[in-house]
Amino acid sequence: MSKFIFIAGPCSVESEEQIISIAQELKKIGVDYLRGGAFKPRTNPDSFQGLGDTGIDYLIKAKQITGLPIITELMSIEQVRKYIDKIDIVQIGSRNMYNYELLKELGKYSKPVLLKRGLSATYDEWINAARYINNGKVILCERGIRSFDNSTRNVLDIQAIPFIKENTDYKIFVDPSHAAGNRYMIKPMSLASFAAGCDGLMIEVSDKPDESISDSKQTIDLEEFKKIVQEVRTFSKH
Ligand code: PEP
Ligand code: MN
Image (tube, rainbow, N blue to C red):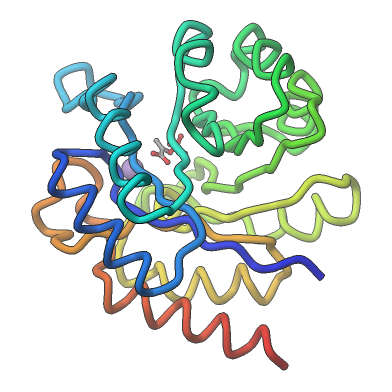
């Protein structure tokens, strides 16, 4: 059985100090990969769009200081060509799951790709998107789907875990943050996903969640994150 993986970090890279201090704390907790968005696909064009190239530079600096490998979203073929050698996992966001030219470009490299499920994508569409990359290194990531009920941001589709396991050879990670949209749901949804057999979790975590520029409402603090890691690790041993 391969190791259960934790990816954690802020929604967006906001400053050099912010990403380095969060990375140092996450390293102590034993996280496997540091996340942080530099190119942010925001629904509202007036919202913070990320620090772009500067954000990637800060993320690389955090990696150099802590030794934590990094994952970040890339949104264009140009960005892939520029940064693929500098990052450890490429994140393809929900909004780009159907961007087949981008997916085909990733297929030219042997870099791991975390392919997030489209906002309303069927399993079939998602699996076919993974086949466009087809480099043997694709990890699928369930991040919640649109439902008729907007009381929560999205609805976490736990069934995706056994479905992907039963019908494909892909690894399946879960991002409870963008599914739930609320802090109090992150721990229960993380534990439920682990219990259902996912291979890893990607969670938005910050030392100062209330000050996060993006996705503050769903970002948990380091203490809460530590509890999730400890509980999962305890169960993993039995
Ligand atoms: C993210 O993880 O930063 C993100 C934007 O998620 P999604 O693509 O799932 O909306
Ligand atoms: Mn986010």
